[in-house]
Length: 583
Image 1 (cartoon, helix red, strand yellow):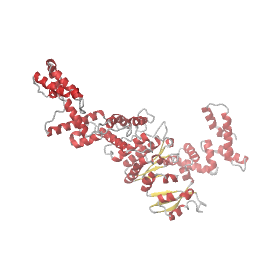
Image 2 (tube, one colour):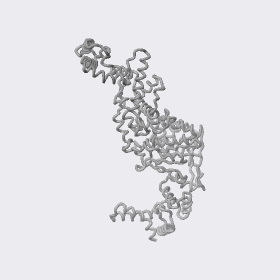
Image 3 (tube, helix red, strand yellow):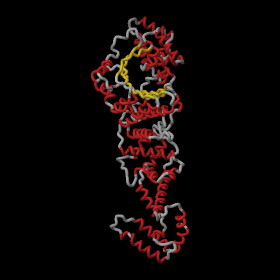
Image 4 (cartoon, helix red, strand yellow):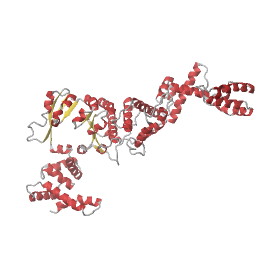
């Protein structure tokens, strides 16, 4: 009743995964690990998810070790909030059911303030005025009255009369002049009345309010009009990195160029933001990574290993792939309510152990506990713990159990780690006994470890059978040998039984393993015969070393025969088998 997800670098768990019948997922350029972290329903939309996506986007843009400024965080948060609002509320007239204040709060996500709406409101009221309203005359005013009032306004708004006026609006002069020219010409006035005036008065436009009630109604009309315009321009039909990128391209120019709160390039450089993120957009180098949903069957798999050794040296992909795997685990954790869950992060945790991701790691630890799960972090370097604030503040402070292996090589500078793990002298003395007692005779493979829960711990021994050792080994030659047996036999349990039986014919394990890897299949009577022949012929010498030297010598000779690369590899693969058949 346990689901386990392991994030590893180095193929350490391939044998364990095969034995358990788990799902082994290895990152390659041809088949990358993909995930669409943007997909969620309205119930899953929360602050933690926004934090995760904000950090993910910033990490792509600036890298895992960069520090996010308050301005950058605010902009990315608001971009995501508005992006999801557009998706969840598409096709809904939600604005009709909320107050003016709520509408204003919504517009603040777009960096649009009350002052912006008021300014646009006044500009639109002005632009919606008829020529009669501009000149301050009635619809049936005689031409003489229009001329008299028009000349007065032309004189008032004339540029020569406003040379030292800082608030002068030249546009107003042109509008007055156009109204005057139109309404004082009988033919043009008639045409205006029949066409443009009819259009203006029939359109759904703001009317000049005269009472408080009318003003409030007109202001609400302006709010909703602006929201409708945004909804039309910023429509989101699906959730993915692709649609988010396209949304940023439309939304951010609006947000960043606000009249009152104009954001500079230094505070948020839109050009570099879109340029860097384009790598993860369709057609880009990593175009599938954040756009293709993970295999849905993963959520039902009890044991999954994600092997990401192929991206560990890629500073862009390594932290992002690690993050999307962790996000997959969180989704799995929420779906599998009836099972315990464990996320085990091997050396891959270093990819996200930055100040930027400290909050997310803390969120992960706390959330996992709520869903009957646990997070396990594995490290082999003392400096990883001592020198990383994220490890101390987010991981160690939220861990109830610590397991230490042999620490003898760190004895001279163990004080720092003892302080961090709250290990007093009594507990340290226990640690120094690990693998140092005379208790190995007559036992199977045996390693000791220190396990601490709460304030004290004890040293325990882990004794395993040869079959268990071969299942859990991380030594690549041993793993390869077991894989050759498993491939030939077709069953992992039977493969282990077979290799243990063959070990009685060719011992120790250090001799059997290289022979299997040279033969690329289980040893048979021909290999055994050849091995014993070399032992007799070179008595007192290391038979494996002699066999390896013979193989190397023949392969060198093959390279001098000018085979093409493919043919050369085929010939080399047959070298050991040809030696075996030569006896």
